[in-house]
Length: 95
Image 1 (cartoon, helix red, strand yellow):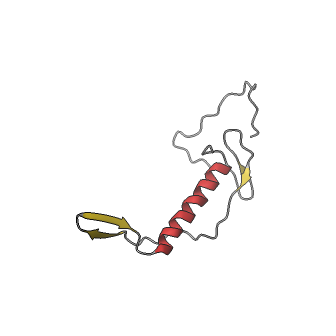
Image 2 (tube, helix red, strand yellow):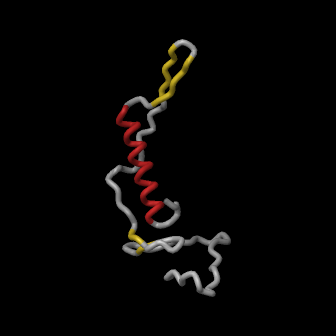
Image 3 (cartoon, helix red, strand yellow):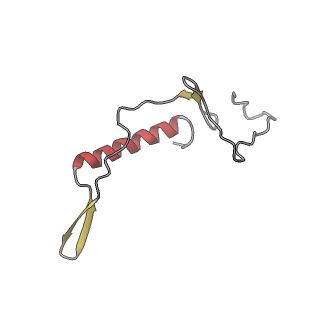
């Protein structure tokens, strides 16, 4: 559905109520809050970041937490940036 613009008298459509609902289709585009609709993104980041447990190091009375490898930390940052980019491109997060 095209964005009717600010002066429109179009009313909102209720979505939900327990029924399944799908937004977009294969090869289609989606946009929210007046953004230009875009196609679904693809990624080369893989399905998810490895779920290695966080590690801690204690020096004196100070305990610091971190990741078990720098690769894991970098992958988390890359995945988060990809999610942020995808959400801003369809208008679900404002920049």
